[in-house]
Image (cartoon, rainbow, N blue to C red):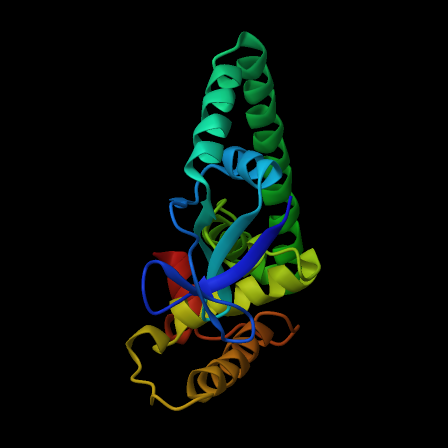
Length: 224
């Protein structure tokens, strides 16, 4: 079946297509809220539906799927019966276990990539391990929405971006800065602070004598 894509319109029963044209939701249709991927797939497979998504910043969020109420009810009833079966319970438990194992492996791989990117000198290996664990713990939780969860770039790039983002929040005054409401201002500030963060990392990479740890925000973090 066909699933047409729209964005929210000016009213609850009106949606907007890709060309900006407004369309009235077909009379009698109901909105299936997001959250149950299995049910949504069943409904889309059973009838022509209207999917509504909204882009906020760089992220796109589902606002539900509109479909005839009978289609939604029938799909839900069938799925409820299947989900009550022992076979479904076993399959679900297996899926959960596989995802947990895959996530644990990804966390371990990501921490290695962070350590590789840090590339700290031998005298700062303990600091590198502390930072790597902190960055990984912050960036890898499922559903966190951080760069570590994207698959659009390779894992080494994710690790680098996660370190720079973590440093921006942990070692600069970024969170308390007032940023002008001008297009590109926040991005420019992030680029500037990324340079600060990279210089901070470089202080821990070379073979030159150690620096004053009390004046280093990264060293101070590790000592807390």
